[in-house]
Image (tube, rainbow, N blue to C red):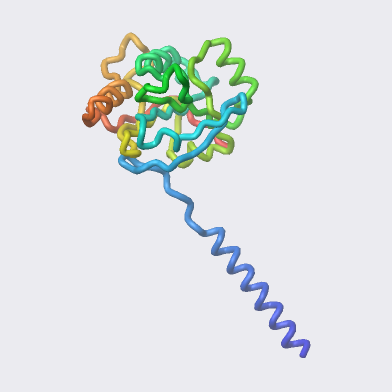
Length: 210
């Protein structure tokens, strides 16, 4: 009798271990690639306000920019990002009476674990950033997009698919810029055309993940 009980317990333990192994080996979702449809996600800014990508998918052109206040490359693009934000009429990241007709919205995301909400808020105020900075705790969204550096941008068309991925332009030095990849991609999509550039290697500081 004792042997049967012992054998049963061993079997239960083995089954439990098998179950755990199967759960641990379940494949995570692969990072998006150019042309993939993007799923909705929600993130909060440093003031606790939630922003829902799903509100705009299929309705607006969406620019997703991975950002880092401590990265000199990301900081060097701040004025250019501000200019693009204002050019395309998206004066706020969330729909308001002021920008409800804007065809482009921006999701500027910080996925760097060391950056605190307090530091981001202070930086945003001192530099008069017109866009909200959304905090991606545990770099979940960065992993889903496969973002590796800051700045790194993705443009989602009204078909909900990634139409451009990569750097904002071709030079950190604004005086040496010859090709404005992000701007030309958005301009083309607004005209109902395909972007002249679809993927350009992003360069900058590595995202500091958990």
